[in-house]
Length: 175
Image: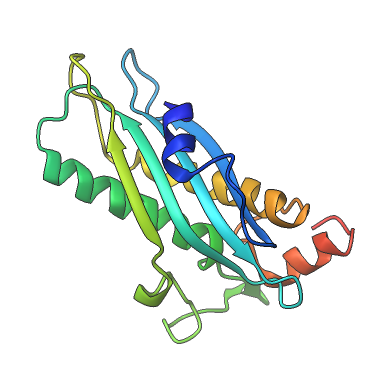
């Protein structure tokens, strides 16, 4: 499954400067038959500003027999975009014990202009259908973090991945 996601994303090909591919895999709820998800994220990093732009998310999902293909696709795309939003955009700070962002003018989730190309594939399976709640949410952030590292050699370990943390990591400081 990981190999399939990497092949679909173009792993091994040449990329423009400061562009990287990162891969991650996870499984859903702990039970006898979890949903497995692999993600390859392609990002571009602006070294000067520290801004990370997700260009493409490629996901391969094994959820057993897919009962409703359109619903499964919509659920997986939505979950992946939620994961992207949490990885690069969401997150609030507390000031004097109070939430700083109390409105969407300062709390900035993923906007439609930030949605990258999405490529989702389901593994053909004869196994029983399993849950597709939000497994694609948790795999996106580690894939993006790995892609940032591949692009500029900077490891950022906190979410959301903020430009100042990327700049600090590029400068050689622990972010």
